[in-house]
Amino acid sequence: MSTKTLTRNGSSMPTVFDDFFKPWNEWFDSGSNLFNKMLTIPAVNIIESKEDFKLDFAVPGMKKEDFHLNIEGNMLTISSEKESSKDMNHDSRYTRKEYSYSSFSRSFSLPEDVNSENIEASYHDGILNITMPKKEEAKKLLVKNISVK
Image (tube, rainbow, N blue to C red; front, side, top):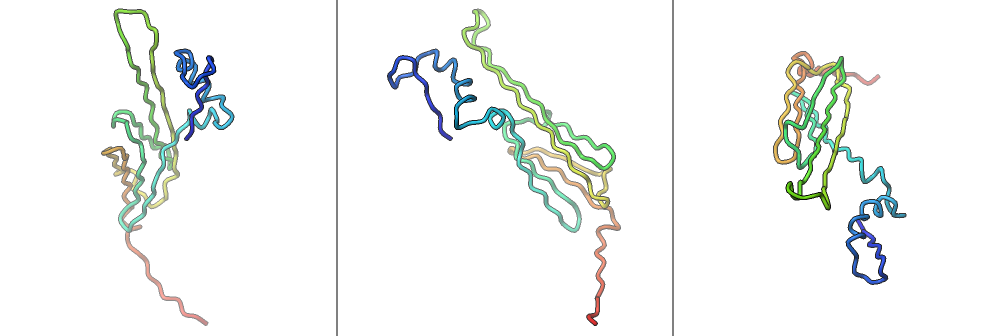
């Protein structure tokens, strides 16, 4: 990722105003896209075993309280909303105040053989793990020999 520094004084040394306008300069830079900078959807791995399905989301920097898991019908929705701010000095006027806001939402259709009553989720080391056990009848693997004619 490259960052262009715009200077008003013609030198390679940025001014305080360059730092102030930096977010807008980066958004409207010809090599970047506003929506790519603001929108992040976590990567997910989907693993199927004989016993269950597992979803692993890469979501570093979050807390387990930041996540919302919801099942409606056969649709599983995972979402998060996080806002943080840094207060520079409470006794003074703000010269600069920084905050960030991030959110995402992903939905997945559950297979018919998932036991939705026993879905579990855990969060550890930046990975959200969701385990969806299969129904007992789905665990029994049907083996059938087919003859070639």
